[in-house]
Length: 204
Image (tube, rainbow, N blue to C red; front, side, top):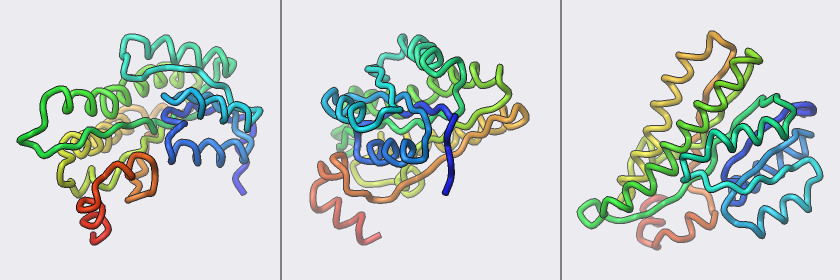
């Protein structure tokens, strides 16, 4: 079994279905976690369930606050960030001809721009230690596309391409950047998808 004792990890989107499971797994492997999410009750539940979890409430769509957020995380973790897991994500589904700019912007801003900025600010910290790992949670639809998800597919495909560029820039500094692309997983996010879309996804 992997032992993550003395490893410090930042996890965004900790209150979602995937994020919650990641939190449980990493704490069981003795990692020290700083987590953030949008659901205060679920954040409190995580904090009560695991003694080695630190909760910092932060809206990652507020880009002007993200550098301060990473500074807070670093302070809580004794100025040592080993891993950043960019897991937070949103959907705003609509067919392309009906999708307005606010629906496009919301998904791109949270899923792609926030992931870039958090990675950028964490890399600055990791460079001082000459070590770090960034793991970006993408999606299979970033590779396949999906009906009604031009914005979400673009954001997740963009994360994959961005990760390749970041990895080329910082591998020589012992900082790795990788993606995990989950398939169709039963979470609160996927439960919002209508049955027609669900059946099409399952058929693939």
